[in-house]
Image (tube, rainbow, N blue to C red):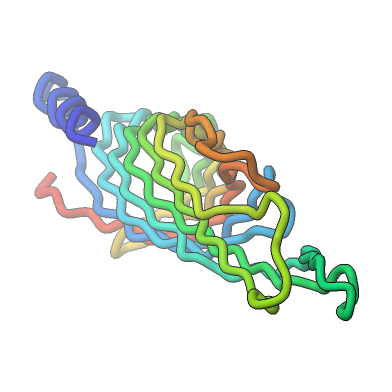
Amino acid sequence: MKIALFLAIACIVLLPKHALSQIYVEPLAGYQKDLNNKRTYFFNTGLRAAFRFKNYELLVQAQKSWPQSVNYSDSSYTANTALPLYSPAEKQLRTSSYSFAIGNRFKVAGRKTKNSFFISMYTGLMIQKTTVNYSYDKTNYILLNPDQTQRFTGPFFSAGLEYMREIKSGRLFAELNFSTPPLAKSSYPSSFGPAAPASLNIGYSINISKR
């Protein structure tokens, strides 16, 4: 995280000052669907800084994906012949995610209008945690190879399309992004893996520069 932040600051400092036209702050919110684990989804919020250079923008973004509970059913077993051999075990998964990324926004259409289309790409660090909780008769039954709480931390890459409309007080935007999962190995064999979110976000771009 410290390395990524240092690189972001270095890029901003080293870029030619005369080329920088405007600086924006962009709060955003949206919905994410996990492409690796089909029942997992998130509501996400984030904050982005955009440094505009004509038809290109340098982006620095922090984002959080808020956990939503997903319930499954496993089987627990017993050696007690007076009880049924197996019994349902309710399993609940809660996945949350944090990310910090540096991005590039390229305008591909609408250069002379208030309506513009962009291609965006990000690279950064993602931290995910999936908490596992079971509910069953733990006195008489046991679980075979149960899932365990796991944490995934590693670099990721994302890319997407963005529509933006300029208004008097700033810019409104909507974007669709597809992200890789964090490049990290599982510490324990599980029925789930790291999330690969597809995001649909909306946001507002606030001009904070004097130009």
